[in-house]
Image (tube, rainbow, N blue to C red; front, side, top):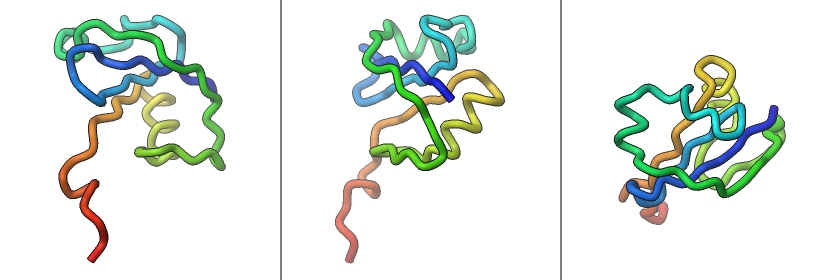
Amino acid sequence: MHAFVYKSLRKADTYVYLTARDDFARLPAPLRTQMGELTFVLEVTLTPERKLARDNVAVVRQNLATQGFHIQFPPTQLDTMPDA
């Protein structure tokens, strides 16, 4: 599965994955407004074996297949805390 990744210029560390390049019409209007301008950063093939830095590739692939987009939000404080 191919994906096109865009960085939100309004929301720090927030990325949008799309199934088609520049297909911003897939995003609901409120989400497009919230994300602000998006800039292209990466074209990637998402295979089941691929590892992603933050998100589970299976979840990303499922979101792309069902809704045509996936949002990667910034890590939370809990995501960045070392294991005890």
